[in-house]
Amino acid sequence: MDIEQKQAELVDYFVKQAESFEGSALVNLIVEATSHPSLFAFSEILSVPTVIELEGTGNSIYRALLRMYAYGTWSEYKSDAHRLPQLVPDQVLKLKQLTVLTLAELNKVLPYDTLMQELDVTNVRELEDFLINSCMYVGIVRGKLDQLRRCFEVQFAAGRDLRPQQLSSMIETLANWLSTSDKLLVSIQEKIKWADSMGEIDKKHRKEVDERVEEVKKALSAKQASIDLRGHEEIFSELGGVMDYEEDRSRPKRRRHPVG
Image (cartoon, rainbow, N blue to C red; front, side, top):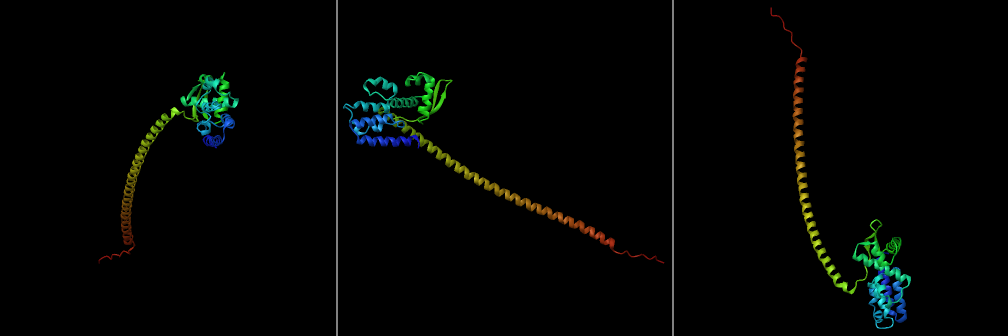
């Protein structure tokens, strides 16, 4: 099962659970979701009516926590830690993984120094272990660790939930992509038509060449037959002369009597 399908199934599960929970049961569900090792999308859970209803209650900090997992980073959590629930180790790990995804959205070459600062990692070995075991092995990112340049080159990163203010920008990006795709499709169709027409021309040319080759073959065959016939006639003529000569030699000669 690929990561997208697994995400969809987990999101569907937690959304259905959240719709039927409230109070402390809903709080526990939010803690479970933000601790789950394979869940990296939270905006759909955040928009469930029972979760929205937490706003203004004593459990509103858990909706704020869920919002942090949907859009925030580890450094942002530390800035607001005084008004958010304390995290368990699995939640810390999850938020750091999400932080890598956010950084990967902004830049495809991530300096080690930036990553260590954002993730509260003290040395390169610890950072590389985290990137390999907690990110690449999990499947949320792929890339190359460059120890010489001290950076992580991102080749793939799973997408995070879109912040509300990013929606218009994303719509514009998708519209531009759709327009470019339409133009590219028209160009491809024109090239296909051109290739088809050139194919027809080439086919016609080949047919003409084949017909011409056949004509030449027939002409050569006829000429060869004519040459062979003349050769045979000359041979027969020569044979005829020889036979006449032999015939003359074979005839008995009459003796001449002296005239007295």
